[in-house]
Image 1 (spheres, rainbow, N blue to C red):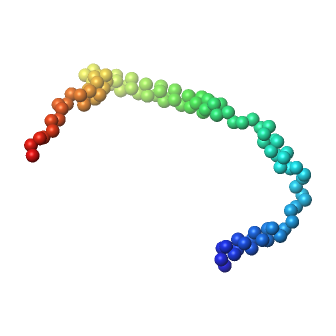
Image 2 (cartoon, rainbow, N blue to C red):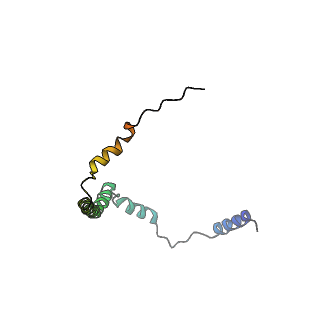
Length: 105
């Protein structure tokens, strides 16, 4: 059967059924009035709740990583200095010789 014909038959059958009287008078207006009385969702409140819930796991991760870095630093030899390694890494690009383009054809 063609889907267009089926759709037309279903719409015609639905239009042939009279509306039901079981729905109370002005039902839509009462529902809409109740919806208007409900307070709107406060996005700042939702954000603050989420951030406060995330604070405890963040503190726990910070403490665990701090203890781990303290433990790792105490077991390594004193020759490895994190600040020196960081400076070497950040300044590695500036320590390189500038590349001179080859102009010979």
